[in-house]
Every structure is written in C-alpha cells, then in structure tokens.
Picture 1 (cartoon, rainbow, N blue to C red):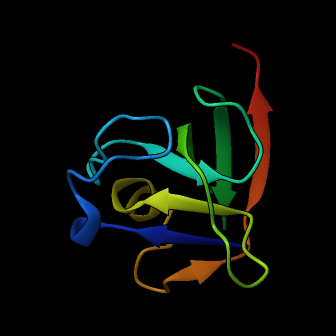
Picture 2: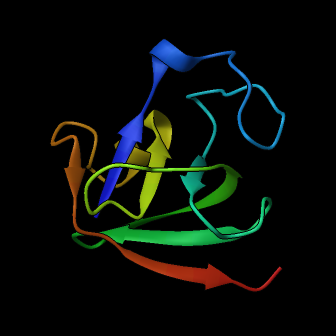
Length: 90
C-alpha cells in the first residue's frame, strides 16, 4: 500500500536533509537507502521516484509518495492504494 503527502509539508526538511518539494518525484520509505530509485506502479501506470525521506509509520503502507508522483499514477485522488515496487539499479 502507498499513500502520498503534499503541499502542507513543502519546504520542511526530509530525513535526508533536503527540503521537501511536493512537485518532485520523491518518496519516503522506512529502510531503503536515500537516493534509491524505485519504480512504483498502480493500475497500469508507473513513475520512478527517488527515496529522500523516512516513513510511512502508520497502517500497512510501505511507501509515501510526493503529491506529484501520486498524481502521475492516478493515486492522488484516492489518497492511498495498492502498488507494486521495483528497486532500480543505480
């Protein structure tokens, strides 16, 4: 399961130290190294995101997407949904 986080956190520091930008294709994951590139797929759509934050820490969610990434795969309106993750070689 994935969810997204967005404009209310813009400019705040992420766990990696960079400022959060909801317009960038980034995501939070509990354990993947910062800078990891992950393909996130949802209902036939996919987006590649860069891990730059930690989370999510609630429910059964495994990744939190920026609002831009969620929009690209049609997940923003629903708020959360089932996704497939593929760690890409760097």
